[in-house]
Image (cartoon, rainbow, N blue to C red; front, side):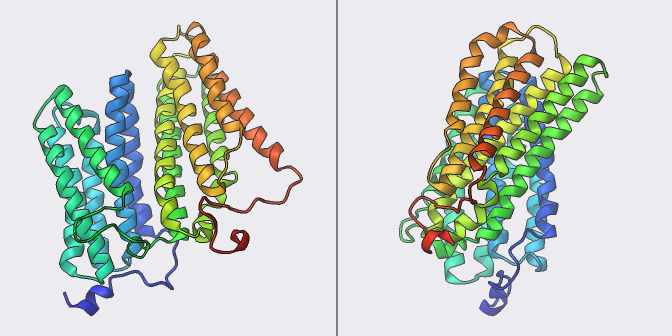
Length: 401
């Protein structure tokens, strides 16, 4: 492909930065993926099962992140770009379908689909030869995904603990390489220009995935209720579960979630915000997946004797969410509201007493903690002017305005 035709595939600066219909279409796969993760975790509710779910979530997260970054750089209205994203969607569908058996008999299918998505996208960009900065970025990605392919495939060819160790190494390579901006000898690290960071598009991207996670939570809750009868105890569990979902949304959006794009645009070095924003959302999504497992248990067994694993799922989900939300808030405002760590400490303090009460009471306690955080947010903002973003490292314009 000639240079001019390759450059025609790039997103133009004047194009709208909102998520396109193609991106929304691609996102549908991740509703299934998160449901499958929560399903697998509920079937293997243990610390080892949680570790396996984390490894799979990281793989899915990097598929989402790098595909979203691809559409941030390239014009999603162009047929070749649509073809690449659609092929990634097919690969994501395969990943989602086999996720519950990825550590069983479907390991090679999972690893193969993951590598096909990541490597073929990079190969496409290198072959079409767009601008120098873009090509260098995808050469770096090709190198690092080639490195992580070794433990991915080796792990798929083994079983049990060996697979867990090798796949952990693989996701660590992918995660650390991205955090370090894909350093490659002779090319150095990726620059802000290569990443083509757009505050508006990043804001849309993170919000979209968060809404997908909440959608998974609602689906799991609704399916659990429809399949467990409509007694008073289960109806109460449904109300508590729905209240928790609403509180997660409210705490996310107020106020950092509303100002994410503004914070990126105001930052002196937007690239410094990319990694903490990425991982804060990953932690929050992990919390929502665990919350879905807990809510399913609460609706199915509202007044049963709580098991330690059940209590952990019900309380750890909101705790993970608050931890991620605290990191997110620091990324936008360079400070953390005291109600975040206080909520975490309260959930931790409740844990020793919770195995002695029914799951519905455990869920009520977690909902009460989240309610306290939401109320503290509203009280702190009462009568004060809206806070402007103040990301770490300072702003490029006075006051971030």
